Image 1 (cartoon, rainbow, N blue to C red):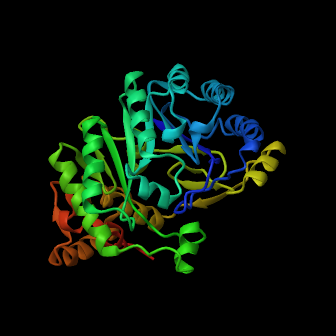
Image 2: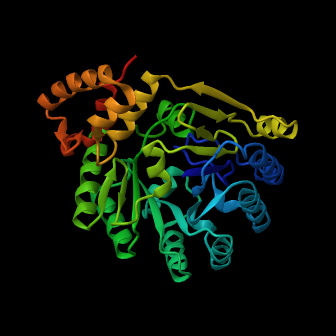
Image 3: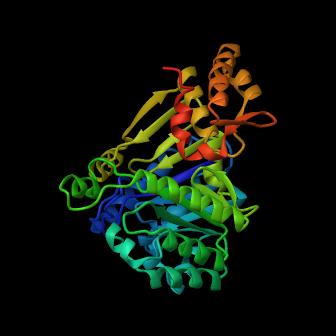
Length: 374
């Protein structure tokens, strides 16, 4: 099996913290869609197995009009083998969700929504420069559920200056009240070249508080575990049977094709990524060329990626898998580093290997780097 990711690089306004590739020049959507349709055809030989997940990300895919969606989805079905029970996710902003759009999305096969709630606190939303408010978030959830879309994921951002512990708990309780089956929780990060980074550098906004973020992370884990959510990946929580299949396949190393500017593709042997520039992307596709860079994945790079991903997952690292995929030398290296981290209390044993200890999950990326071969 395999997956397809489609990047829609347009937003109505720029969130202060966002470092994903996007443009607010929405008047160019038509030209982009025509280029995307051409890339879909040009890349039709990239995947050689049926597609079991399709994911529209961005940017703001919910900006797409009916004519855009029908053309894109029609091209995907024309050029790729789509599994009968495909998980089809669309990222949507609350202010884009209404009854007409929900019916449109259902009619073209979308069966899962990832809603960018971020917070139910208006002060926090204004600080992030989000385009929606708390009431719109609540109405979006109610409209989607009333229309029969129950497979919903909601994003939350924690660790923002104005978000108190009590407000974060209220956000979680509200999602639980609406029986949202999947929740993704991300610590606010200050990325270079974002508006947030500039505002902090200019002393116009407070910087993030690392201690507060760690406290919020522990609070989220405790609250969601108590409410029956499975903490299956560092940033992701799901009720039983509602893990994100698309993202889980990423983490399992299953091949996927990325379409659109800045989108990444992976076929086990190589990784490639499209140019992060809408104009250059459209111009190149019009000339019949896909504007991408490519990297051949050597053993060390593949091992490092396996460790980074596996240590973010609840199941952790499988020692037999390391020996099978990378050989006895990599297994010996892993066991040596593993022993030191066990002694520091950062790892916990599993039946097949080891995982991050519960009290060290907020440090997962740093712990994974201890294993890297450079």
